[in-house]
Image 1 (spheres, rainbow, N blue to C red):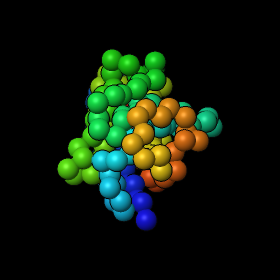
Image 2 (image 1 turned 180 degrees about the horizontal axis):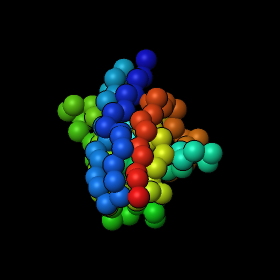
Image 3 (image 1 turned 180 degrees about the vertical axis):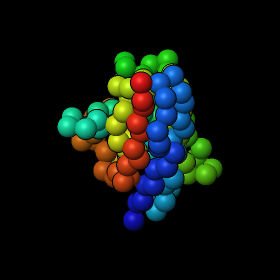
Image 4 (image 1 turned 45 degrees about the horizontal axis):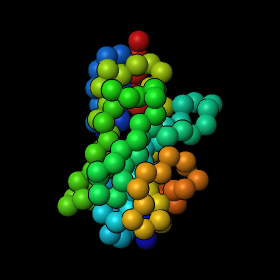
Length: 126
């Protein structure tokens, strides 16, 4: 079965950087779009960034444009989220997700994703 395991979260000061990783297993990784979502305490889960199956197309939420970068390494079944210039409002649980839509491009809605990791916590102190 499909499994997604996130890592790389932690506590960082405002202005700092973190790199999240999501290791996928259970099927051909390179055939499916991937996404990163986040859920702040008491709030809904929202898209942060998404990447197409081949990595050629990306999407970013307005709040992270210019600061975050999504990438994927299909040879190693891993998707990354490089987060720079972090702000306290970036504090959240971060989740990676993938879809059953073969050859999918960019998917920004959480209901279009079928598999989720367990999440990794990111805390940005002011």
